[in-house]
Amino acid sequence: MTAAGAYPVRVDASLDAPLSRWLWLVKWLLLIPHYIVLALLWITFVVLSVAAFFAILFTGSYPRGIFEFNVGVLRWTWRVQYYAVGAFGTDRYPRFTLADDPSYPAHLEVEYPQRLSRGLVLVKWWLLAIPHYIIVGLFTGGGLWAAWRTENNANWNWPGLIAILAVIAAVVVLFTGQYPRQIFDFVLGLNRWVLRVAAYAGLMTDAYPPFRLDMGGRDPASITMPQSPASGQAPVPAERPGQLGEPGQAVASGQSSAAAPGYGPAGQETQAGPPPGGPRAGWTAGRIAAAVAGALLALCSLGLLGAGGAALWADTANRHGGYVDLGSATYATGGHAITSDTVELHAAGSGWDAARSLFGTVRIQAASTAGAPVFIGIAPAGAASGYLARVQYATVHGAPGSTDQYTEHTGTAPAVPPARTSIWDARAAGPGTQTLTWPVRSGNWTVVTMNADGSAPVSVHVSVAATMPALPWIAAGLLAGGVIALAGGVLLLVIPIGRASQ
Image (cartoon, rainbow, N blue to C red; front, side, top):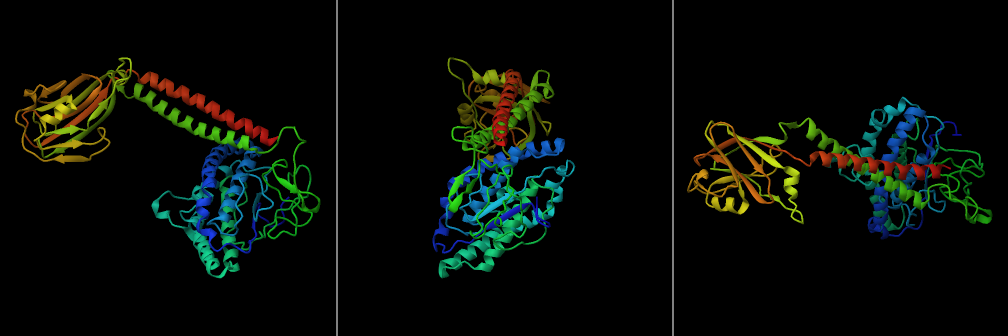
């Protein structure tokens, strides 16, 4: 049960003394392994939060195994932040664990909610939390709390109030050896606000975070629960500064009894859990690794399914007359020609022309917007470069319709009109819209459009399409791979979550 007037998220910390005057300068480097692991854990946090969203929406309950994992990620993050720029409050290196570390001076606990509102879950994490997101953005800026930034805009990439105050305190420690207590209490209040909002946005509670700074190392919003085997927590010694509970009390958390260490007689650390040789409960290292792999696999499956769906749409809705539309655009230059970037099409081994299998036959349609007869041709890149060596022309970068970037080349008019050269592998010329069809071959190629007489300026509308004979197989392969990856990701998530919940 929660104490009257308490908030179900408890954040505590005790200030270590003395602190090193210099260590804070390199803590960011020492924490690189933590940052790598936390990046993977936060990806998993997001994926599991989506699963928890639907579980709450349909059942009104937050799956216990997911809850324990997500609370553990917040707890791990808070320990790392407390060691580093979130407070610089300790020189003790944080452990690599989701469980609470009783020996560490920073703690976070969240009371498990027996029931959650099925309607509130639709709006609390984005609409209702907007005022808090604005405040949290001021507190954290663009610092290490990146998972809770409200914008990815570079304008938010500033250190934030928490980091500024922590650095000020570290500078004071550098010169005096003492951490200013007033700054410590204020920094803890700011972090406590951020973590409450994080838990609320993570769907862990329906209690709206209070708009207040509960300053100091000890969280005044106590969570108390009588100790029992089902509570999953051992009592915490009262004599340790910054402790989580009073004598005879335990804190409700998202960590099962087998995952969190406790204390036996004479303050000796013990490990709660099943008898030796039995199955381990809670989030073990293997289960965490499986969940992270499952989350990454699930995200990859979304990319495969999206790409497969796009390929399927292109092969059906975007195919006309046997050709798949690849884009169109209008180009203009004051010179005598407009060319594409060099198109590199490479053959696979054993004589298989992969480019032809993928693209089939390319169709390029071009029409002069000024009404002049138009020329369009495809030539080997080297031959096209030789023909235009002294000609004034422009090279267009990117696919049709995707860019309007040009590279202008100085020169004069071509020595002969384009139709009188023999460099072209395929060509079309004349008034109106001209259509060039070209069975794709491997090699390096350049597409050139000009006025038929080689005059300047040139202004044309170009459309590109291809038969894409392999597209149905590509779509089927991507969709099948996405389904397999999604099934594997779900399996890798469900099994450790289920075992961690037991």
